[in-house]
Image (cartoon, rainbow, N blue to C red; front, top):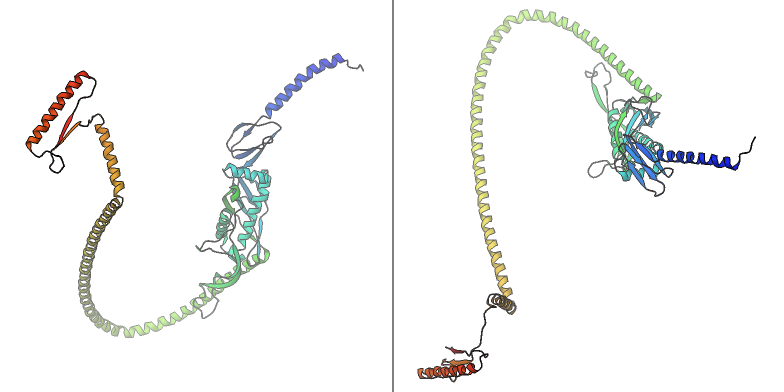
Length: 475
């Protein structure tokens, strides 16, 4: 065998390396996506970032090859206990019938099917995935155990005879209620159970063929009620994951041998009682028939003798009855008129009382309205008085605010006006010292003002930039 040379190895490497690269690329692309189907919820786990993502709709999604994991969960799961699946649909789990023990210590096997639906809340689905990791653990560790546990607990609330003699429908309703909202908080208590049975058979008993109700004391598990009369409940383990119970179906239960024997014996006893009662009724009917035959023969003999007498009596009785009927009719008519009169008077009385109530209500309303108007006026007067008292108490502040507002208005409207102070002042008031006492004094004063004005003009002619001189006379 010839040893490969370095040149051959290099040539072989150049050929295989591209093939390996292409294979790795194909493998990477094939694992870089995953497909979601309808009816399933998928939890995508990114092992690098640790992020969990939930997909509930069909589609194609990207994934990180070799560093991610996709876990599918059925959105609807069916757990079947018993060989006969009532729903005729593929079950997630098919197990044996549930063995239960009733309150009277009898046992039985109950086939049942439970349908569960996952939550639409992504956070609850992620919480469920963190605790159960995959569908098998979810079904076995929670759904199967919870369904079996609730079924066993519900069975303790019934006796064996009560369950197999018509209590199956009520059992199904309680089972579904406790699965959805939580198991009842119960206590063991001795209660009365009502049973329906045939009365004892007796020759002198006329109602021996009728049913009668009997009371029996038994120990049962009874729900504890709250203040509103509703049963107290324990925490539902399905709520924290948002799992819902959508359907509960119960098949044909099977009692234990002793209970089955008891039910069969009771059924046979009831059948024998019915047969005995029928035989007694037949014998009674035959005896009554013979007695009736003799009574018929005797009656025929008596009837022939009494027929004429009875016909006469009947004629007299008919006359008496006709008179009695006429008298009854008159009494009825009188009573009818009396009743109509009483009803009419009661109607008038009711109308009068109603009108009185209306007038009283109107009077009360008017009185209340007047009181309301008076109270409103008093309140407004008190408010106004309080306002003026407050203004009087803070008079200086109030006047300062008014002067401030007046100054603001004057400044806004008179800011373009120019006010100049007079340079000369002449007073004509009699109350001031040095005032003018006569018209001559006034004329002299004005003449002096004129001379002063002329002197001012002469001075302003030499000083053109000086301001004009003004005078003022105060009356």
